[in-house]
Image (tube, rainbow, N blue to C red):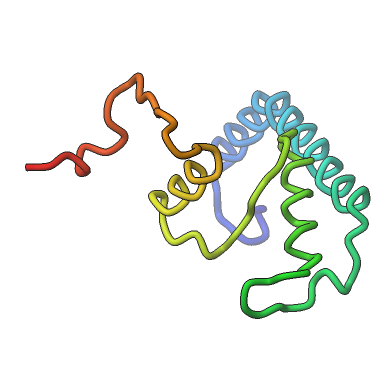
Length: 124
């Protein structure tokens, strides 16, 4: 570092000491990152992702195997029963509406045990 910056030896020593002190945490972070990378790669392999899955589609995406595989990959990675991954969700409210329409049936009652979902949805 001395070749590029004119730091004092005291600052360099403090930097080295901080890195030694943080090494255990950095190693833990590296282990987590490696585990998650392997989990993602495994999900891609298990779902047999191929070059054809990256082809674009138009309209509703009927028969879009890439879109379907992406959903399965996310479900595998997060240990979920299923997933829906779309860039076209326009906001949090849109996403919540899709989820609620997916799980609630006509005449179902949804309980909000912590209060109303959005204060802004109350009438005046």
